[in-house]
Image (cartoon, rainbow, N blue to C red; front, side):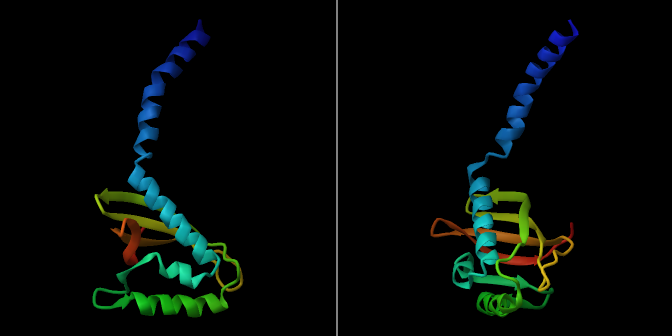
Length: 147
């Protein structure tokens, strides 16, 4: 009798689990996450030419309220950094708190960064703004964020 009650309870939970899983199956969100992981893969390969393709022409890294680094300067800095970082890289990152609004999105990236000795850092957090350019998600803005 107890066994059949557990079985019935598990059947009652199936619709709730389906709703939770369905919520994360938003096609735009999945597309954005896949694009983000492709950027991370290019970054870990230290493939600057491919990394550049993930940034919109108007991209900027907001260092402070009054200072923003434009895309060309930011990517140039990545190129210098790639010269001293281990190859291949082992950074890991995930997107959280994703909000999609048609052809734009905001998210927070949680990243573990590999230093020149190969050691992974404590997590860093970056607020990101993405937009679709020619039907493809591209980064337009990044700035430091809190957990």
